[in-house]
Each structure stands twice: as structure tokens, then as C-alpha cells.
Image 1 (cartoon, rainbow, N blue to C red):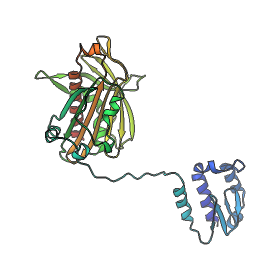
Image 2: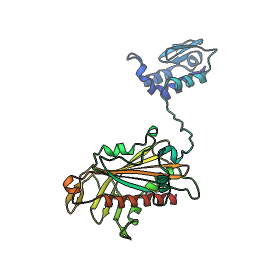
Image 3: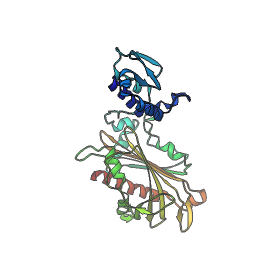
Image 4: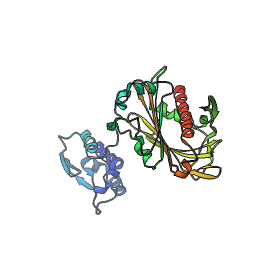
Length: 333
């Protein structure tokens, strides 16, 4: 009986925070339970059960409004009942098989599929009143376009590429570590008039939107967060500093990386894209054919600026750089 009393006291100390709300106001606190138990003589603990603020006899003990017979009840079942009635503290990660490209994008034509599987992939620009070409399976919840449209963009660019696996299949942790190489973005170029030009001259993480102190990239992670927000500064020759917020979300099959400008984008000191009016969302998922990289980007330009400045080719080149940066990062994993 002494061992039984100690087990019950241990149960109280460990699990009572989940059930304190069910105690009445007249009952002693958990600390008072412990104090009372310490004052009981050892022989009393051997003869009687102390639980839930009461001294109970040898034949029965009370737990959560249930009465169990001492002789017939297995004390291990006490803990099983707790996990059945209490909150789910442990969530088992589901086991799943990779999907095919045709499951994620079921309505692609043969020509479009060939482009997606090519080295350059597929990119398409359209305005807000036009329809996209890339339409993911609506049952999978991959609605990048819907999230971008919340910014009320005037111009949209979609892209899709499947990078084949080389030596081994990549997982979500590989994707996360590839996206962590912010300092290497500046090393990539984009094609312009049959030549390669450097778009970004600097790329670095910063502390936050209010504290723009530069911080280094972390070492590759061994664990995968479900959600993370990072801040980065990209300096380029045309628009100067671009300040972006990156939100990383992990789902069962893939990882979504959303970037939004938290400060105005300026051209010769004139704001051409206001804060929170640009969004670029990248979704990555390992599929049977390789690593699927799907992105939708949108930005808003007032009509009088759009008539004079065509930002679509500029944004297209920057998307090209981001895709190169991601694919190279994945190859390094």
C-alpha cells in the first residue's frame, strides 16, 4: 500500500495541471495535498489510500468521478484512462508515399508537362483579370494563387519546374536547409540580352522588420520547424534595398515559402510598389519525378506607373534567380 500511495502522489504532481479546472474551490491546492501527505505517519499510508483530498479505505479508491475495486483494477489502467480522457499530447507523424506530378497538377497538356520537366521549367505572366495556366488539384489545398490574390495584385507570374533527383531523394528537411542559404542569393545571375547580369549585389538576413541589423545564416538544421518567420534584405542595382519577410510553413507533403515586402520598393526615391503589395509564394514537394518547385508571384502597380514601367520582365528575372538559388541549394543537400 505504501508503494500505491507514492504512485498516486506522483500522478497528482505530474498530471494535476490538466485537471485543476475540474476541482471545486473548496478543495485544497496541490501544495496542500503534498503537505498533508508528508505529515501522515508511514503506517497510515501503508493502511490507507490518500487521493483527491480524501483518506479512502482499502477496498475502493476514487478517480475522476469513477469508483474502481482495488482488487480487480490494474493501476496501469489509471494512466491509460488519463490519456483517453485528456488532451492528445503526442501526435504520430503520418507515413505517406510521394505523389506524382500528375496527381498534383492533373490537367496539364503533354507539351506543358514536357516544359515543366525541362531544365528551364515553365513561366507565364498574366494580369489580374486573366486566368492562370497552372491549376493544382483543388483537393490538395495548394492554393498559392488565392493567397497572392489577397494582395490585390495587378500583375501575376506563375512558374513550375520539376528538378530530377541525382544521387538520392530529398526530403522536407533538405528543402528547409536549402532555403536557409540567404547569403548565397547574391551569387546568382539572370539572362538579359544574351548575357548574364548580376541582379542582387547583397543578400543577408536581418534581425526583424524593426531592427535591420544583419545576422548570419544559421548552420544546417537537424530538425524541421512547423512554422518560422525570417527577415531578409536584398540590395540590387535597380531598386536599391528590398526588405522582405519570409514565412515558412511545413505541411505533410511539402513546404511553402512566402515572401512579402514589409517596406516600399523605390525607384529613384519614388515608391513604385507599396509595402505589403508584393508577394512571392514558392511551394516545394518531393514527387515521383523529382523535386516539384511551384511558385506564384504578384505585385500591384498603379495604372499610370504600369503604362511607363514594365516590371514584369524585371520580376521574371528575379524569379529566375530564386529558382536557380533553390535548385543549387537542393543539389548541395
